[in-house]
Image 1: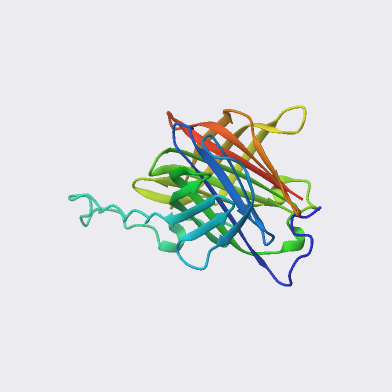
Image 2: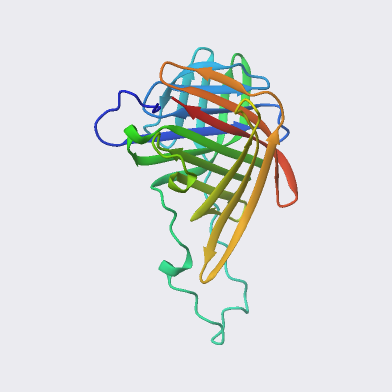
Length: 264
């Protein structure tokens, strides 16, 4: 059954946010798919079923019963200048801009953010990542899976996968994935998510393999996360959202994150 049962005409915008401390003490995630948005949180925060999601500017506001959160985007790092002595006449010219990177197969944006405010009286000041996908056909939105992990305030990764209710294979998913590093952000043109489930169908571990290209060279970035505690579940009128805290690992560094799973 699709997440959006009474779909408006035309396309909708899908929004997701995940946030937390790298030590795993606080974590949460929210999803807005054109029906009343929901948010699930753990650690120092409770579960909240419905959110007024305001996204008409660069900052998002998430408001609900004892919830007031502001999601502020972090500016993307400026491109690093070319080191002196490496741009002489003998150097090979850079590849054309169109060939430097392959465009991902999605429209929208993914950004590193700061999430501040309060939930049930607990102060929130965490690193966050957010996704906004446009031109999504609501009648074909059957489920959403998301992986977000962070090891510091400026190093994180996020993936959001949308699957049609009629599609059983992940090859047909719409997947957006981005790596955030202190020296630049990169969107993957070929992101892959693998999830391990327990006997009840609940996620317990996830791995990412994100492919990027620079000129003629392609290379992967990998990350993984395993359950760090019990998931929290919010059952709304239109959808059920489950958020699982993760211990995350990427390039030899450890941090925290969340796995998000939503279905109608």
